[in-house]
Image (cartoon, rainbow, N blue to C red):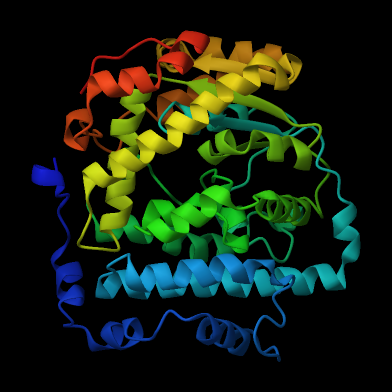
Length: 424
């Protein structure tokens, strides 16, 4: 269990990480010393790809420059990155810019990809730590569905070839990036495992537009948080749709099964982008969610910074999900079409996962058969809970008042009949 006294969060790091952060590995120290500035990153991405231009040339619509101009200074001035954190961050941003440029070039060469229809996609939403990952994996086993894998969302270009699937070079390349945080800080796999071939959340596609909670999870960047809260998320969803269009370009159409808690904040935008979408909303005691998700985010941030304040992270999530879940109640009282939304309860899903899956499929009008059920049972046997270790966390470490938080979420819990859990 990490030391959380006075909000301090400091899980174990390997000796090599400590050495890197002391500056004992010159090749990494030199790379980390490079500035995280917009023009430098754009120029380096262009140089890597061998494309000409200046400024935003080659990267498509200039709308991505505004969030980049907020995010990069926040990383320099607010995130307090370690040597290794800066190095990982720089490589992360260069990959985003390079793939963005590759995507723009691909669309220019094959404009017909924009006519690809994304038919009746299924989105799993709900707060984090409410069973979305397991539900996503189970629904991906239903015949006729397809869930994007990590390598596909990190490196979608060129479109995957169904005759040579998966692209093992891209699997390896993406897998190395996805595994790095777990190599830097202990305990991450017990909270949430990442790999090139696991189903991946939608935020990775939205990050190409630099409007994504992937950044707020990895870094303390309050100025970017404020910008993200008031920005138009439609460009991020448009880019998300483009990634799906590219991924299915060489395949027979299948029904996409997608997931991310971020959709909970932007349901009207989601439905505007995907008019045929169906949404599964997962529910759990918000106080249990706050403890669990704050532990995950603290671990991700500790891979990049020595200064991780668990209480600050908890307060951020309490405000974020307080507003989002209250907005969900308002939408459910009239704006959401009940025929397009299915609701699940975490406690019921943990107790009888296949009963919950059956109910969701019935709500969505998706058929299933005994063979599918057998595949789901096999998946649950092969991926038991806590297989990578126990996720230990405590709501009490967040410094929040249980009574105040119960009051904050009372309307949501009453409306959706969400029961309290014993606080850990």
